[in-house]
Amino acid sequence: MRAIDIKQPGPPDVLQLCERPVPDLKAGEVLIRVHAAGINRPDVLQRLGHYPVPPGASDLPGLEVAGEIVGGDLAGSTFHQGDMVCALVQGGGYAEYCAAPLQQCLPVPAGLSPLEAASLPENFFTVWSNVFERAHLSGNETLLVQGGTSGIGVSAIQLAAALGHRVFATAGSADKCRATESLGAERGIDYKTEDFVAVVKSLTDNKGVDVILDMVGGDYIPREIDCLADDGRIALIALLGGARANIDLGQVLRRRLTISGSTLRPRPVAFKGAIAARLRDKVWPLIEEGKIRPVIFKTFPLEQAAQAHALMESSTHIGKIMLQVL
Image 1 (tube, rainbow, N blue to C red):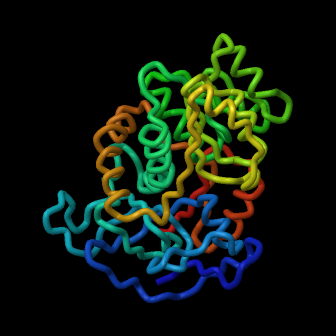
Image 2 (image 1 turned 180 degrees about the vertical axis):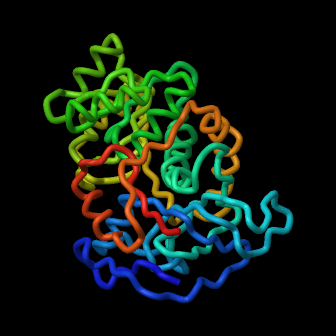
Image 3 (image 1 turned 90 degrees about the horizontal axis):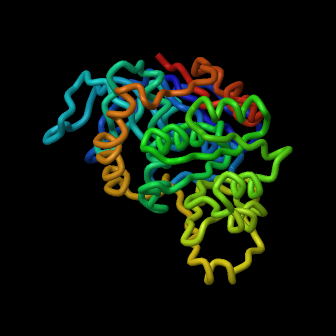
C-alpha cells in the first residue's frame, strides 16, 4: 500500500511517499480501506520528534480516518464488511489501509462524505472527553475556547453552542474572530489586539467563564485563572505556549478552581471506546440534524502531505486540513 513515512525528524519535506505492507490486525481491530485522513497538530509534533509513538502503534502519522471496513472480526458489533466508518487511531492514518480498534469506529453520519467524516474523530473525541466529561460543562455554564479556528476550536464552539451554552473564543485576526462567531461563538476575541480576560469579564458581568478549553498553556494559565468564575475549570489539552506557568495558588484555593490536563493518544481502547459510544448517542444526531457541520479548509492528495503540514504550521487555516487518499 502507499503510505507517508517520516524519514527523520525535521521540516515538512521529511514526509515521504513510500510502500508499506498492509497492516496486520490485532484482536479487536478492523482493517479500513482509507478514503480520507485528517491532519492534526500531534502529527506535526510527531514529525518534529516531539511526540513519541505509543508502544505497539504504527510509526506512520495520522490519528483519524474514514473509509470502508474490508477486514477484521465484527462479531457482536453492529458493523458489517463494506460499511463506511470513521475512526480514531493511534497512528497509521496517512496510508491506503489502516488498522483501527473496532470500539473506536463510528458510522459515517448520514449526509456526510467520507472526507467530511474523517475530519470528526480526533476533534470530537478530544472535545467531548475534556469539555464535557473532565471539565463537566453543563447547565447554563459558559465556555471560553482558546484557538477558536483550529480543528479542535471549531468543534468545541459548535458542540457547546448546539447544547445551549454561551461560548467565547479567541483567534488571531478579525476575520478569524468573525469565523468563530459564524460557528456559534457569542464573541470572537482577537488575542493579538484585545485582552481576553477583560473582554470575557465585561461580557459576563465580571463573573468570568465556568470552563476554559486551553491548548496554549504557558503564560496563558495565570490569565485564565483571572478569567475563571468561582468553581471554574481549565481543561488543558496542549502546550503550544510552553510547559511552565507562574500561577497564584491562593486564587485556586479561595475560589475552588480546577486545572486538569490530558492527552488522548495513549489512553486505552476501552476508555476511547466509551467516548465513541457517547458521541454516537449525543453528538452524531446533532451532526445529522445539521446543527454541527464539518469545517474543512483545504484538502490535499496523500502524496502532498508535506504541503498539508506546511499549511498547518502557518496557522492561516480555519478548521480542518485533510488528505484525500482514495
